[in-house]
Image 1 (cartoon, one colour):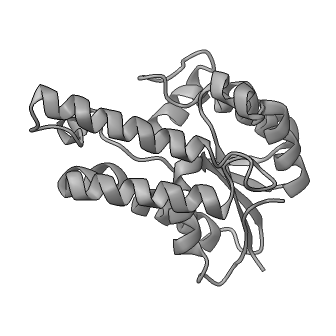
Image 2 (cartoon, one colour):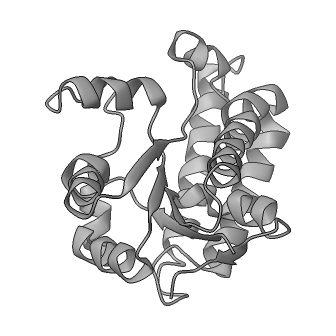
Length: 211
């Protein structure tokens, strides 16, 4: 049977150190899972740039640092196939800012609430065996995006719902064409709950959290 795992990561190095989600921990978790394929939160165009020139760091700081510093080298070291699954369109991304259309005063108030949601997410870091890979974190994250959907459903649909649908479909396409493999999804931890909800009913063995 195909086995699919989910590992939610934190992209920011300072936050990783603060909350104990170091690259060493990620390496241990990936090694324990022993994937044959990693589906990562990397845009296909960025992956193509990396294949051509491993010093080309893409654009907008994407992919996140854990890919350059850990995951890409680990895939090469262990002969793990890497599949890029991210999706976004840079030319229209800013047009779907969730706080577009609000006055400056309203935007500041909304950004303050958004920061409060982030703090609530961070407060769940120790509520599981792996920081930010827990029911508590996922529930708080889901509530945050429900709030964002109330604020601007059009933007949330584009930036979050559709993006995740495409990412998850790319995972499905991967295991449909790679039967009985061990496949690890490495994505920002905010994506965890959507990946779990979508994949839990698939004809696969889903492992989340990894410990």
